[in-house]
Length: 255
Image 1 (cartoon, rainbow, N blue to C red):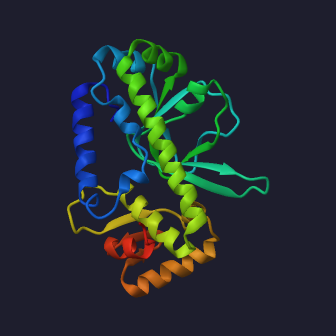
Image 2 (image 1 turned 90 degrees about the vertical axis):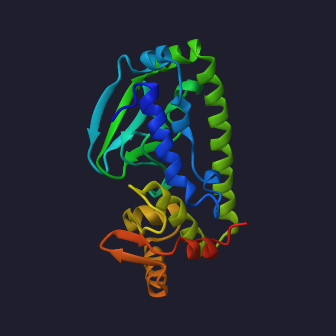
């Protein structure tokens, strides 16, 4: 469902609060998750109308690319439903996932704001509904909305802090710690109708998880087997079911 008015935005953000409140007391999830869904919250109706007047919704099949690094942007993208990986590819064709974006988040607006090419690529992790918003409409909404301007500045600052945390993680933590940390973060994105104590299924390929962790697929497979033996996770095909998130937090050794 595309968010088109303040009432829908309120209910969406209320749901996001319910999703996060069960872990915030034991893990600082906000330091690892972008908050671009809050950009549109409670915007004046006239600003929402400018943004959405020429929107185009499209269904993307799993694995389809939304945009590629180096391409010139024609607009921004809103994840109406689904999950998207942001990634870079090195000279040898190896993929490094930078971030996994969830329903309600915005993509591609950095390139529009900087009047530059996309700094990374984006592809869907599962069948997703993506809404395209022309760049002209996005910029027009910015020009008329002080609220949108302030939120974009706040969001960009927060995203910088999240990426700084990620760089520190790669520099200072072991592969096992990084895997535990990423499972904690990704678990939050896969919560559906969640209630405290419920196991959460992560539907992500081992290759994508390895790319996110920054290691070889074989290492991820081996460490998942170890976590399974410990009773921390369960696996069903490509699905990973987190049974004990507190144990993952211990393994992540986050301070």
